[in-house]
Length: 591
Image (cartoon, rainbow, N blue to C red; front, side, top):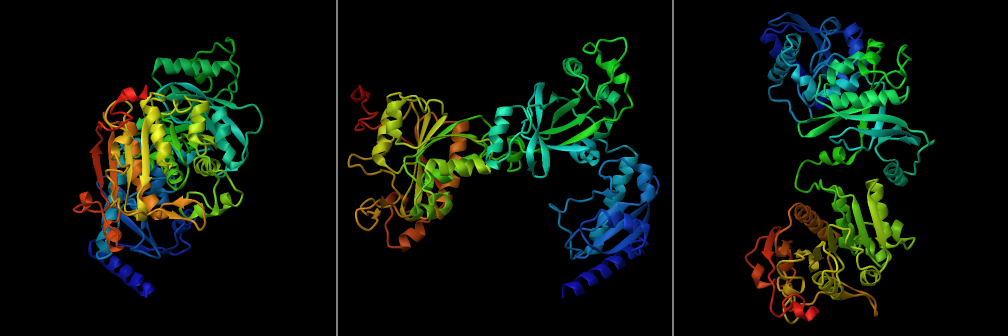
């Protein structure tokens, strides 16, 4: 069926193009143009068409490669070998003579009018070539800098260094085994690299690293730097020139430069290497001016380096610039690594946070696994929850710093009152009201000055709460409970009890599914990242409403306050001090 459809579309397209003045010539498989193109192509093609087009400037010959699944896959348009040699390089024409017309990842070909769609692609291709010949679109080189730079790359290395706005020295280390197919990695910290490599079971080989110089520079055309002497064409800043001079003068083997420039909201990172420097008569080896050094080897070609970016900036930028991306260098303490705490830690790591302090006194049990980040593998060896979560986080994001404490949080604070002071925020996900009240009490006694966040889920997925307690202004955790100990803003009717107990006198638990936890964690992560960016001036409660309708269908009652509310929304409410609160209503009781 599909074969008939594709054949029919192909015929319709040919007829349309001929009607509009395009004389197509079918290419045989042994045509030298077809052989040249198929050697580079990954997608099998049904046919190849040769087309001579007369533009404003000149006549050019195009080769259209029609995929087997056209129109569901875009045709590719190539410049003939003769025209390619005459005009390359120009923007949007790669080294294989492919003209970049449309991005198939974001564009869809109109299969109802395939002939018209192909005609438009041909017109785009012609315009690209003519604009390139006339040098009207040279600015596009910079827009797609890395695509052109990497065309003639000699070496490619991994990178975990995040570009910055100051000149600095970097190190390139050889790895004990390949990662992602590469032997070398670039970093600004050997200690950080060693920590980053641990989860991958890879080490550094040898003590000697290649010393490289990092330069933040202005954007330039990718074909402007090909030889030693071209370096002076792309670098104008005197301080940077002095830095390069000093670097080259330190050692004859110092010849690797890493550079970046800022474009469209991100850093473009790349590198190159000069051949080892020769001795120059009349100058001491460490006192050679840069202009003299480069002029002595001016036609010596550079070796371009492609950097495979694994740094935090690059990895997380691919997720978009939404508010969930935490760009600040912050540290988070998570107290409780159960179902909520474990998923939340991973979710915050996905938001770009790379420093955690984890506290939990329990080991992972098989019955924990259905709604925990970690599974039977960790539970089978009675792994501590903090260690299990740390393992998952650092394996997923190498380089993440996780300090862990397998102990009761109150015992930890009794031994070291300042242990949480290094953290920008403390998240309490213990599900134990007594301990949560004591932590709230200690905050109001100024034992630690971090922002405090209490999180918990309500039964059966009906919702969850994120309570931000400001250290100085507004109410506290206890202010959100009435004098009978009931949470004032509970989503379910507190006259009903939901706690379950294992058979015998075993542990008590609150029923909710892993799906509920993961839904709530997505909301909690977004709220947390926004609080890190801009904390409210007063204590604030964020209530997430889950599936209210399903909860009521199951025969349970809602708190009347939420009767008219819609599911899956967030309600924000300021928490004020209450006179009956012994923690903050009357601070004298704390003395």
